[in-house]
Length: 210
Image (cartoon, rainbow, N blue to C red; front, side, top):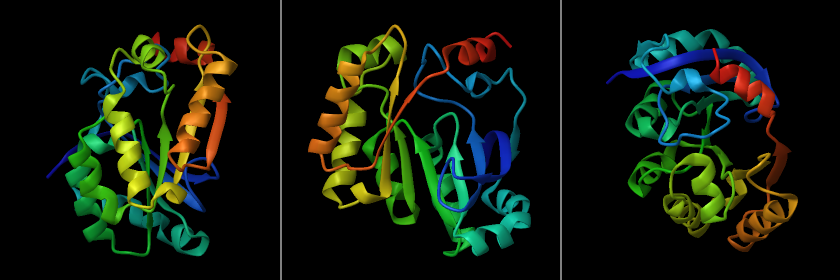
């Protein structure tokens, strides 16, 4: 089993999970967000490396002391990491139980992909964009039905406390009132850890023009 990975970012603190983490950015995403911050993951035309779970473990093992000392570990992002659900499941078998595994995900994948990794993931960083289907579709080019279904699955399984729900202010797409409605909707589902922030549109535009 091999996965295409666009980048590894080591020794990160406080941005994508507890403790010291290493971000593993998978290639490809089901969305086409207008202000995508990682356009290099969307096409094979950008450089990437392929790893097996064993090869990735050996590459990341250099940071094990930091992981164990701080309660950190690996954050799988992208792109969309859940497109590589079987890889992540196998990686847990290889790395063992001591490292934390975090996911940065949009959750817009089949529920079976999410259910595959629930036993091996410690925390979820979920960017829902906006809970309004019209706003979501206009920004991502996709429907958010799978996102809502997967949020319900996490809530019903008692995993809401392992999730941080990210609700961005997306200039020209949603308003502070829309964000408040999105926050109320996810709180109604049982999620209490909410991260509201504003997209840096100019930075995203520069990235897409590379």
